[in-house]
Amino acid sequence: MKFVARHDIEAPLEFVQKTLADFEGWERAAMRRGAEVSRTDALRVAGPGMSWLTRFAYRGKERVINVQLLALDAAGHMAFIGSSASVEGDVKIDLLEMAARRTRLHVGVEVKPRTLGARLFLQSLRLARSRVDKSFDARIAMLAADIDARYRVAQRA
Image (spheres, rainbow, N blue to C red):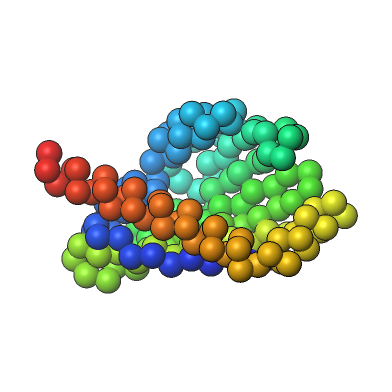
């Protein structure tokens, strides 16, 4: 199942990319929401090969997902792969400079089932496709608005 969202951010591409590549900040944000996050690589610099083990509760069960950074480049492309016992997924983030202070954020997620239970769960999502797409789009819009607000605060400082 694929999800795609596109939003424009009133900030330069470099600022948006730096914000998205703040992996320690994302780790802290996940922990504030109750997830356990631990790095499983030995890299000292952010780049392909970084990986995390995440644990969190979802629908009353503990979920464990291994996440790995596959690509991170200066052109504004990031790619992740995540896998658990029941699903695997790919996340691709592309940034496109629209103007000096305007960046388009394009996020694509593809989720594939590994078990019959996961297949049934994804089928239920397909039945509610428009609601799920709206929810996904709203989350990406919130991310874009947050980056936009961070840039405005950075400009005042």
